[in-house]
Length: 201
Image 1 (cartoon, helix red, strand yellow):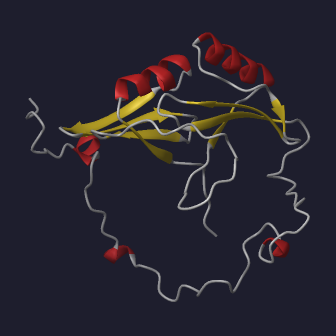
Image 2: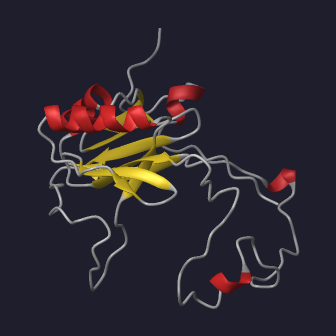
Image 3: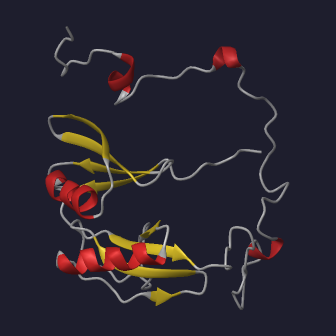
């Protein structure tokens, strides 16, 4: 069984990396831990937690999206509604609300969802964001809840992975065939020289 250890990174897009850095690093306090780039392209990473990162591509011509209320139904092509970042304490949630309001970013009241308390806002790129604190004694990770009055047939089968839904793997890739190719960022850690890089002394 595969063990997931969090969200390695969420990748968003911006047309203004400086404005994005000032919001995520300077206002919210997420460390800027890596930066890749060359003319016409940047890819920067912010640390959410010990295991999770938030990344932004900066491409010329990217414009902030029209703000959409979190969870409001839409029609037509659509792939993303909002992302929620967890905070350790209820005090953290209120501190974030105060910071956002002081910096003149519109932010919702604190909303009780039963298992989390949340606030809602948008970053400078128009990305809908939520901040949530887990309610004591209501951990859906330990005690999954299905409260949909008309759940889908797949949901009715339970919280865990169901056997037989997908074809079984019949051949594992042997270690001798596992090839990892260099990509953007490999030069930061492996010393590979790129055409845009000044030779190291």
